[in-house]
Amino acid sequence: MTSDNFPIQEWMTNQNWIIFSALFISVLIFLLNWKAVRVLWLQWGTRRCLNQIGIKQRRNVICADGLDGEFILDRLVMLPNAILLINFKRYPGNIYCADRISEWTQVVEQKSFKFANPLFDLENHLTAIRHQIPNIPIYGYLFFDHTAQFPKGHPEAVLRPDNIPSEFLSMNCSEPDQAILSAWEFLSELPINNGSSRQQRLKT
Image (cartoon, rainbow, N blue to C red):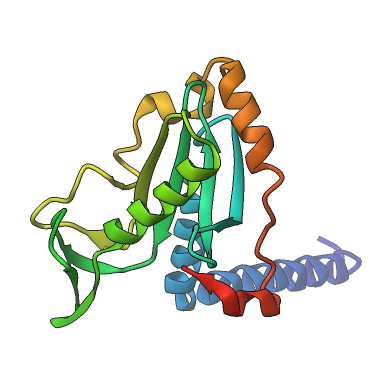
């Protein structure tokens, strides 16, 4: 081996060291931020899970409640023969609940918190939509993501990423009925909440 090869060897060694260092730093950053990365990954999975429901969707729709007020409807979904209302509830931890009790309980790290039974608000929202589009099948569900667990079970109106009915998935949906198309056309005219001062009049 001639001395002419030494600069080449030194350059290759330096390059390998730079690559190794970059990989090591990348792995270290990933491990240190694994929790944040996992949260982002699961949030993406939740959005993907919700977005694959139905034929079309509208989010944050403002709907009159019939009492000189308004609701924000989290997510309206078109199915072939019905309209779905899905309200996303972000309550991590263990959830203890039932259909008709006034409050549900959330347990996080051995601390418990009470919150109003969201099924009551869901029914109010459904009533408001039915007033807008009568004679159309409308069904409502609460959606809880991967961070919520239900040790004692949950009402039928609770959806989770692992129990979404297959007939709700867009890939299994047929062409919508004409009545559903007409109803959706009306719903598409309802305003969207954009966080403006109008928020003060809204009920959620």
